[in-house]
Amino acid sequence: MERARLDRLNDMLGEVLRTNEFYRRKLEGRFALPLAGPEPLSGLPFTTKQELVDDQLRHPPFGSDLTYPVERYVRVHQTSGTTGRPMYWLDTEASWDWWGECWKTVLEATGVGSEDRIFFPFSFGPFIGFWSGWEGARKVGALAVSGGGQSTQQRLKSLLDYGATVLVCTPTYALHMAAEARRSGMNLARDSAVRVTVHAGEPGASIASTRQRIEEAWGARCFDHTGATEVGAFGFACEAPAEEVHVNEDEFIAEVVDPESGASLPDGARGELVLTNLGRVGSPAIRYRTGDLVEPRRGTCACGRDSLVLRGGVLGRVDDMVVVRGVNVFPSAVEGIVRRFPEVEEFRVDVVQSDGMAELKITVEPGAAGAPAGLAEGVVESVRDNLHIRPVVEVVAPGTLPRFELKARRFFRG
Image (cartoon, rainbow, N blue to C red; front, side, top):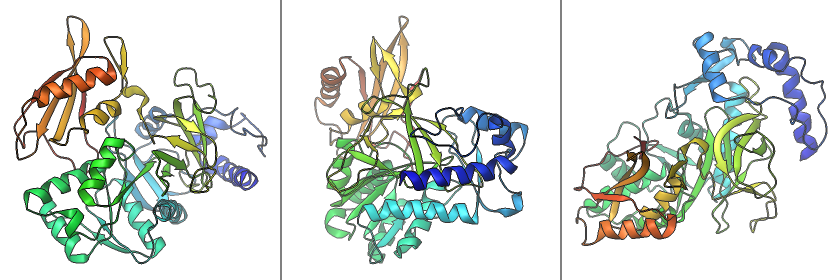
């Protein structure tokens, strides 16, 4: 696999350096082909999101990370913009086929095949994730069912009417659908045929308490998937019962570096994930700093794969960490605690300043039955016991907080 990957890397770089203005400016004269050795990319500079954003501002609308004339491209999508200005991203026929193959790997790892009916409850806007998942469904030969242009209630009815066996959406929306079903008197674990749920777009499906809530609500196995518009569908969970995500090393070269220095980190050390994709020659990402915090390990999984594994999937964004009274706090850690309370249907976390110090305020919204006595105090104590800080917790009325179909926004800095 390493030999084949190195050959593909050299082939891609040879083509990119001939005609891709972005990478020709960035890499020309920095190395000689062919690259060799166990760490062939170590001498190349990183690519950052800000570089790509700036490049699109200088060369509107699509930037100069284009290996071919625009006429060769057949798809355009854009990033969510949750961490800055949205970026546009083009794909050729070949790279779109590559996206589908990557998602095929995601689906097959969960046991999804041609006998399944996959329901996609999202609006089919410019977000690439579930468009590529739709293509992956075609690759495995499954029946793909669109939930675009429907309300949550209409989607629930369609899911039941079509006898869908697989659900693909964000973890947040899977929980929202379950809550809406309960309010309508449905029991999805009993009434639906869904046996597998696959989640992307945000962390959550690798957080134990969130995954447990999804599995209990749907009566199905819950699987995480990691990817990014700029890079591709790079990670998948397998059927082994572990909170881990495999990196698809057939299609990606992965590195983990210190977020501050950029130095390579040893196996097991938490750091920032850096990816190079091999099948997206038309708009490649070479040593791309994803901003994702991960904890890698090498070794054979119970499923038999020996690819790089990320413990807990994507743990959060490197720049999401806040220091609250001397304690490093990530949003995923707070979610992992709040989701343990079955009475909480939605929540929001605010980092506020008080007397010159950061404080944590957590707003929790209970389900239709309302908040049981002591809910706020229970959340306070659980956060204190696990994170060693004492937050302010406010309970609001059912239906107060916003709901999300795609990436949720629950973490705010004051």
